[in-house]
Length: 83
Image (cartoon, rainbow, N blue to C red; front, side):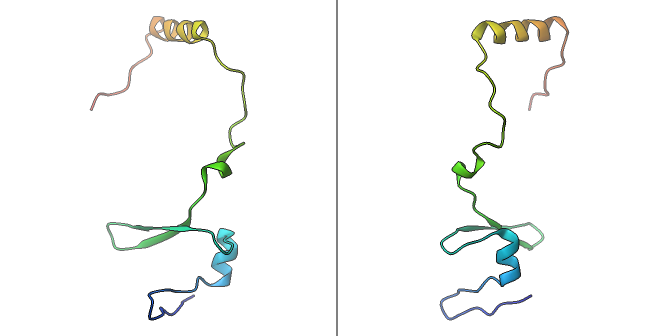
């Protein structure tokens, strides 16, 4: 698929691409330029769209956090590498 660039530097995103990305009028997109020169276009997703991705769980208490940390330390859980 291809699209022409207007005098204002604008291009129309072909309909199959808009449908694939579920883009609607007024939506925003982001462009990423990779080191090899390729360009990726992705829809900009508002933070509100992320709501509900992770199942809600009950809050964890400080005592539960401390107990989990102590259990991990007692088990000798390896720590991440320092940079």
